[in-house]
Length: 587
View 1: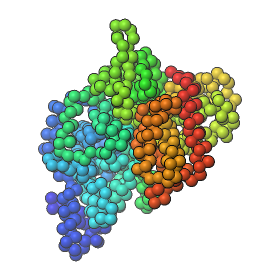
View 2: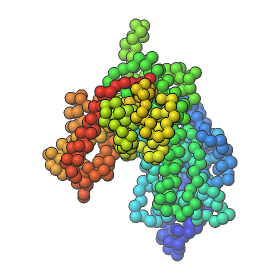
View 3: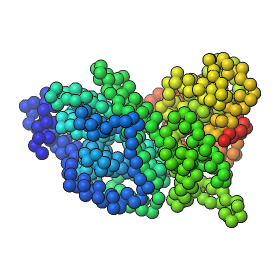
């Protein structure tokens, strides 16, 4: 135990600060005690055995693979390895570290929020390699340096490290932008290692996908504005409620290792590193049976689908994934697809997320999402939506070509890029160049014709135009709820402007609920109940502010140019009306 204090206090940046200051050194030791893991191989083996005989039976499997062929044990032996996974569920801590320890027989030291350091369970987590960090430490320089020095200790000892780059669980299912703090600290700590202890630093992006996330009901409430519950022993003990659920499988993919920048650890280089890891995680998120079903079923705002319709749509989406190299679980391949979908529907029926309508013996059986569970299902849909951004945007562009709103190639480019900009605050997008090339490749696939430039798009035949809309029509409503949320937000701002000219966020949240209820009541433009989502509404405020439709000063908002805002509001309304009126749904 003494070794850890000696190594931490030898960290150059910390050593310089506390040299000759006994009181400061004692504070460092207390902070280390607050942070440190106390890995016990005996406890880890017992926990693996416990999981093997209890929780593992809830899952059909915990699957782990690598995107490219590499030997993880060799990589860990020859490098300082940092795993950077996304975060969907509390079960991520257990699933990833359980499968790595069980398969490779080495522990991973994982950063956990101090909120998880609760009586009994906190001690167990420490024994399994978890170290705890504060959610924020602001101007507490001594804490920051001590945490950095602890990371230095872990690197010095050659231990694999893990941290969830989003900083917490995703509330919506979408990947959240990375936090930079731990990236920077790790780079600083690695640079401080002496040559005889320093190996290359490798970041391994890890994509974790659960076929079922038991926390979705509480996460859905948070989308409606409910406060996050503080963790406690008794609250975490509710994990045993999961024995009432079917959980499906957990899929873990280790991505291509990412090297840190070789130049100075500038803010730009650290952001580049973080987003390179983020992008690799997103690219490797698997389409699972549950996320595929959610994508299909939530396309119907209130209605229901027959099995034949579900299966036909699933086949089309899986085929699209195979053509454009979007990762899917093996059980969605053609020979297994039908049985897999049946099992997934049973999972959601068992967990009371789907309803069955009709009688099977009469040949009229329909499946629908339980009206109270749409936002729970949205979590699974959101986890894969980024894979289908391009066909959805291209579908809207095609509608505007058909109705004459787009008349030339420059107009088409402007429209595509404007729609990409709309989604900038919802997803981390491909670059403009990548997006334009993806859209071109998609048109070529739909028409079977090679295009040398976008100029040729307007020379396509009517049959070609029809083929495009039929092939991508399956995605026509995939992200429409986001457009609806932005429209509700714009209407809210307009209503507040009429009433008080200037407003605060609390005024906005209160009025937005009224506007949403009113719009849902008249049922003209807003069709999806999930279109009222606090994270999306919050993103829309960022969008309107950054696009200079709104001005925010000292916590107070006002419209910058009423005429420009009204024009923008009308364009959002027309965008939604076009999507509702043009209802060719390709399969």
